[in-house]
Amino acid sequence: MAAAELFSETYKEARLRFVAGAKRAGGQHFEFTNPAGVGALGEALVTDVALLGSPEAQHLLVLVSGTHGVEGFCGSGCQLDALLEGYGIATDRHTATLFIHAINPFGFSWCRRVNEDNVDLNRNAVDHEQPPATHPDYAELHPHLLPEDWTGEGRETAERALAQFVAVHGYMAFQAAVTLGQYTHPDGLFYGGQKLAWSTRTFQEIMLRFARGKERVALIDFHTGLGPPGYGEPIYTELDAAGLARARSWYGPEVTSVYAGDSSSAPVQGALINATRSLLPGTEVTPLALEFGTLAPAVVMTAMRAEQWLTLHGQADPELANHIKREMRASFYVDSEEWRSAVLRRGRELIERALRGLATPVP
Image (cartoon, rainbow, N blue to C red; front, side):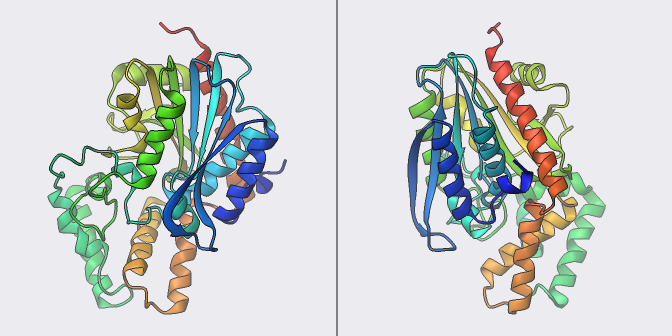
């Protein structure tokens, strides 16, 4: 099947195709409906789950799409490819594959990275009973990231302030300050929320339902927006030397670590899949984010800022609003056959490596 045929134009289309693909592959299908409302086309907001293989299998591969909403176009395409082509299905009875489609259906439908409460799911899985972390650098940058005026003098002043921060501290320090996760500005970027979001609670419910008691669990969470265009960077997401070594033995030496400083991503707190280990005591858990590059980092960051500004100031000029929405989508889904084909090749490669890794004897 041509690459373009596996990627959808809307969340609604992606959902219909995923459900059909899961049934065609012979998977068991389950639905989790978000009560927040409806999608951009009036559709229900549903996270769909498909299990292929025996529920009793002791090894489980979990493929997650849409953690960051708009990034779901990529992950959904890879999931559909795995279902229709069959390579996401283990050939041994000891391994099953669990597909979690659109864990953040609101963001997927409305082409936002965040959920219905402006929460970034990859900053949300923290202990909200503890006092929230404070990040002075983000607080300093917040008014410049989201100035009142996006097109005039206010924007120019904001850009100068951000450029000054980068000049003094470096771009990686800027990236870390902005993207680590913050809990003090509900209207800001990379906001982790004040409680577990519906999507986070649903993910945990799914993992407890399907993965509890397993011997080994591997997770691949599909993301876009960082790194070279079309390249899928496998990022080990935990601070765990043994787990990182295992991931590299399965996926290859190109596996990076957010904590080793060799990744396109800065460290984050509250990543969705990182909560899996505490949910499944006694299970060997290997979490991986598969990050596909799109546009230059500065372009992607500007698109995110503009989209958030538009959300906060909805009375923008229609032409400007349409431009911002187009740039947001383009920053997380490249509409080219070359990019889509590269994504599918890499997705297939990593899924097959994960299945082989799960099949290797436990040391």
